[in-house]
Image (tube, rainbow, N blue to C red):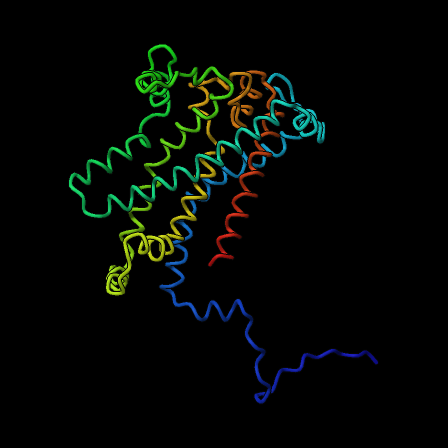
Length: 317
């Protein structure tokens, strides 16, 4: 006798199965909300496609090429970690790391400190306030090559204005961009000066968001201007300071234009930076694989310093 399988229909008393999470989310969204969500994805799609093509793919290609001996003229061959081993055995690249760290160590805090002071001063309702803001911000929007040409004239050992000013007070002039002891310091001065404008603008925007009642209450308690600055202004500027600090580090590690124009990495590699070594490997020696490996190391430095800065800021908060 054959067994006949029958599907038993659920009775009216049997409860229906619980809806899935996906069905619950869909049921909770109205037709208008779903339409807005689709419209949002459509608006984001061009930007996401742009990032994928011009950022994500080049990043992946850089990581891949860093393990090859690609030189433009031949197909890349996989050589594993040879580029990284050679890189960290190269004294010039090691010196470029120290030069970049030293440059960052001085330009970032100096320019930030000056920018805070200038921003506070320009936020006091001074006369010709717009003129001063424009004057401080102008180097930020001026081509770096043009700025470097001006500083070449300032640092010129024969007829430069800096040596002329020093000789007027009895101090002998220096060969600023030729002497290995002074070349890096000269580049640091230019970098710190050029970075003041954008930091000042960010700090001014942050200062205008501080509640004036805090200063009024401090005045009633007899607090001086210096006390207000350290007890109210600086603590309230912490978010802006963190943002300025991060973009300053990234900008300092990516310095290239002024090095190329002012010193060309010399003298004796005294001003060679990591970005300049990437340029030299890629476009002078045509070692794209080595340049990709150096770029990966530069990215790792930026990532680590950003994470450390974020951790320190969180602990302070």
